[in-house]
Image (cartoon, rainbow, N blue to C red; front, side):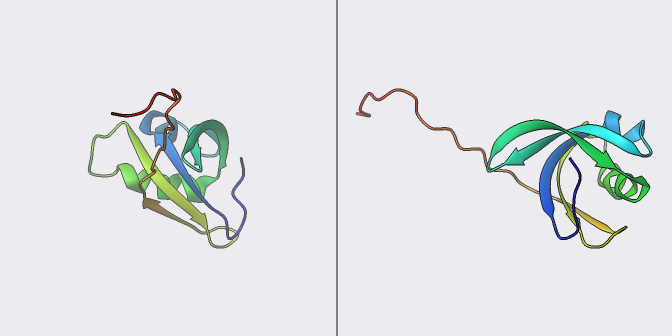
Length: 95
């Protein structure tokens, strides 16, 4: 998955993946309308640098981030929240 200029995505990234890659791709969990999908996220040096800033001064293993590409080589990476909805599968009435 490549992020185009003006596009915003919400993904979950693992610290281990971010620390061992400087450019290329990483496996991330992309949330499309609350549904988690594993994708190969193409990253460059600038994007990896911005994502690594999310892991500074903490020891978390993963992070939910919102990535916005604002120009050819500039990204904004912010912490985010993803809401997952689950529908009831049985049709029995609630009492």
